[in-house]
Image (cartoon, rainbow, N blue to C red; front, side, top):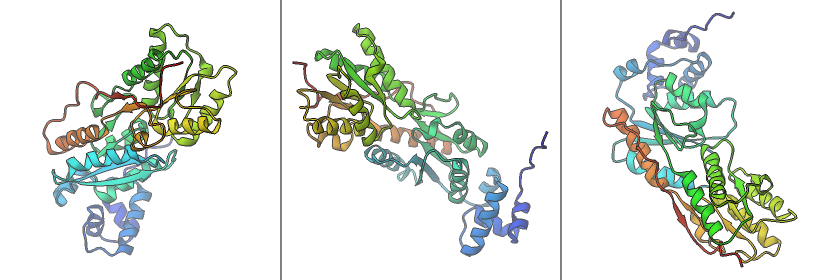
Length: 342
């Protein structure tokens, strides 16, 4: 067996970087009056040695940073993230906290080290984790190791000892599917969301439950995998519409994929909703501006982000930390992309 690696100390970092302990302390605490070349050398040693500053010592060594970090997956669709940023910012600024954003590209074998360095360099006191970051066990394990609190937005499996902000994705998808059934559709296609997102499984479950309630058989041939982007929505729609008996309605797990479905249907000369009804999820800004305007589900993203940031700051400041007992409610928004089956 290999002996467990001894944790690096501030003395190890100072010796590796060839600087004084005081200089290491200044760099770790993000203090001024350190030359950039020296700062880079110290940070390189911190990363190589995987040095973790003691939180209590940092607190004694200087003022709190009052920094909240928001790490997120780079995405083509920005409306969801824009609402997320605005909601968190509305809470952080009045509370005297700085909100710092850090995009990440997934999958990333170095994600733990990237987050570690971001947390150390920016002296992040707490994190807001939108999906799918809150579902990655290596991320939550790192933050627990570093003793940095976090608030996860729509995690797949909420941790009982953390702040979890949930949304009733399953119930909303059920209602949206039920709307299509009520319009006379019996062959309803479904495009799944990215498998790394916890909400994807919940939206698929809602679809299946609605079919079951109304006595409609589930058919795997009417289901295709998507990845929450336009291209995967278009590709999935092409496969569904190529079936010998194509669906009369398609429900996509987000608006970007639904836009891809509309594009594919138009390219085939299909009338929407006359020949094909299409529904999405998220009520992004463009959903009401494309033609026809998209039937979708509106999530209270700004309110969810405000709540996540507020509870996180409350935990950092030693006040209330309870997670909301009930998930946030979604609303089905009916527009012109869906209609009764002729």
